[in-house]
Image 1 (cartoon, rainbow, N blue to C red):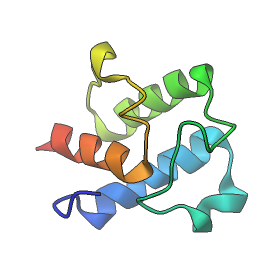
Image 2: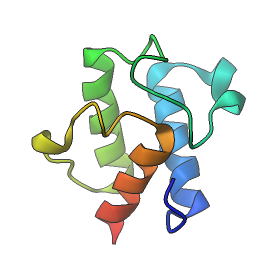
Image 3: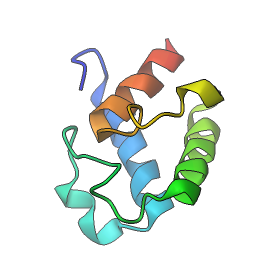
Image 4: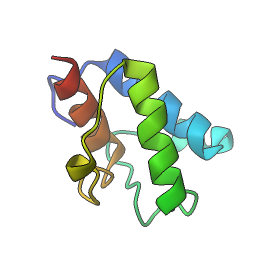
Length: 88
């Protein structure tokens, strides 16, 4: 995670991921280095779409289709960094 990403943005992104994927029981195990794609079986192609929509709604941002790549969903910290950059 980029040091410029505020912990509040990270915490909100984490909250959206947890709620969207229904993994409340594992929320405490997630940190910035948590690998999303490949390690979370709940994060399939449909869940990616749901997650993008949920993040857009929560933060009032638009995530371009071309930005929705495996790299974007590599880690929780990377996803939070992307959201924080959109908020600037």
